[in-house]
Image 1 (cartoon, helix red, strand yellow):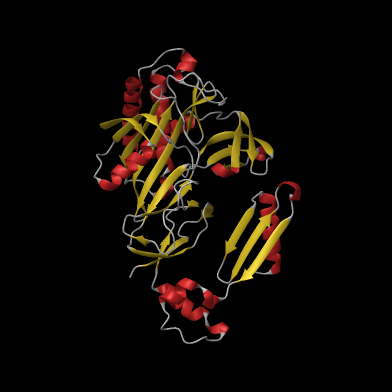
Image 2: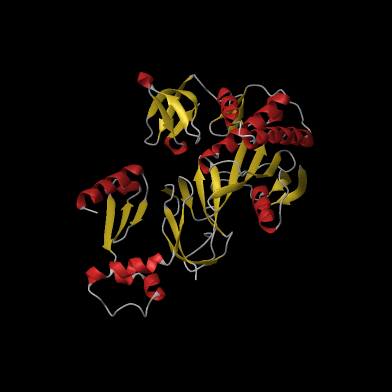
Length: 164
Length: 243
């Protein structure tokens, strides 16, 4: 992500009226906070580089296989290998992704939760139709890839599940 | 058709969902409740009614013949069923406000909450929740709400209304099973509120613009004719009809 893209993102968020937006991609984590009330229009942006080796789930999954502290440029490769043994649960429809049955309720699943076939993972809303997405696999949630209440595309990865 | 009548429950939709997880539910099982302690509307909103005066019920309908992109036909079928049931009771000035509010004399008298079950990326069942205002006449702060009794002055037998709605739902569900989707859409579009009338809409930035509702796309988006003969499809979150 270059500076220009970040700038236009800040503008977009400020215009949207959202008070806070968190965006997490492969190597960048961005938090944009817009001031409310008196400070309307003012935005605070935090851009953070995530050290690849520091992702806790990946370390926990394959501690023995990791060579001791390889050079930073080599780390993405083993990370990709790690993810490949996980099953990706994808969105069957276009819509808005919800992790909770309603705003005041706890999420259907959290990272680390054990799920079985038929467990409800999330709700995806499209045109006022609320779709409860059931798991097709048993395992453990390794990662939630989409933030609550954000739009999702067809086939967009939603969860990583460790089937072992 | 199997009807389960409850005196009070948190939400009939939640109850049906729980039942469906633990036992094989008969297709077209209906659960009614005289009172809902936490009746739900759209994501986080609530549906409150006076006990015993209105209909709040959920229908469990197996659906295996629709693609995920065709889900909106369930919304159309439900709206049409309620519209026609109310027409039977000669409720005046009925219309379907896109996507699925039922209006009488421009006021909302019915809310629909549809929750689908997706297994192996395929839709397997729909839980259709219906809240129909029947004999309640006091809506204090809700200016846009009304009921059958408030409109006609007549007191209705709740079971009779339920029976009509259920019968119509069965009829329209059959159209889905037979995949008479074109017919569903045609009927739905005919009854759309403010169809082909000059209407004012508000976009997400608060700008007002004029257009004519023409119909809906297969995925439920609203087709609006704008200036210069351009027809644009709008998502639910992109547009708000002012009325």
